[in-house]
Length: 385
Image (cartoon, rainbow, N blue to C red):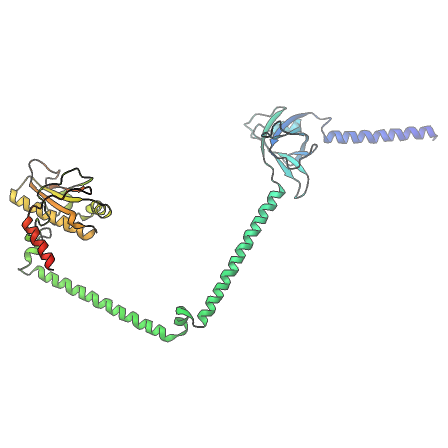
């Protein structure tokens, strides 16, 4: 082969290699394949470069054509991708672009997710949604924070362990109450004897209470005190009306509680309480608020004689006042009763009578007592005591 032929063969071989490289590079950049443009915007591209791969379902399906800066500081970077035409079947309007990294320290690439089948296909130049990339610096910062918290936790655990060792050592040496109980049997024996004595004291107290209850039960059947215990609402007839006032205070009540006598008493003609729990709201209000005067106002039913109804009203007022005073702590000298006796017409739905607890503001003048002589006797008896 002469020199000219060898030169021609070399040129042909070089051209073949050049063309092969062009086709390889062209297929990589889709120079000879139908493509379309797809865009996505990111606040930070995390080092993504022009020419980076675009993956769809883990397969190479395009390249990054350009990464453009925004026109203003509030904008985002625009990544323009050249996508293989065949991806139109799976890339839809709701597909999402994300910037991923090959391994921990590899190159960045764009991953595009599959879209939903009921969504429209993307057109060339469309912009799809994106998610911010995860940067290694953020991972390192989070890892450092976790390590710092772990070290602090271990330090606290070590301190607790040292304290437990110290406490355990003191207990073993018999120091402190627990150590003495564990190491000194005599203390345990003394404690056991003290507990037995306490049990005996409680048993004796229970016996005394039972004896007292028995004595009270016997007193109930004694003819001298039978009237006192016969109808719990009346107590001693001498107590009727001792806290009664002649008329209602001047002014308007700041609070009013209304009851039907049938809801509070056992029978229509008795003052024995049965619905004491319904008085809870009134009792708690009296105990928790300042007031000038509080009045238990009772009107008996329309049936029966006037004298009997007045006595019944006074007995019910006394029973209600005693219950409220005994179960709620407040200045009971400001709690008065006003018995209206028999009233014309219907004073309650049941016909048993109506009860009101009227609470007047601070500064309200106290009305005069209904029985001034009885009040003076009560005051003098309290002074002599």
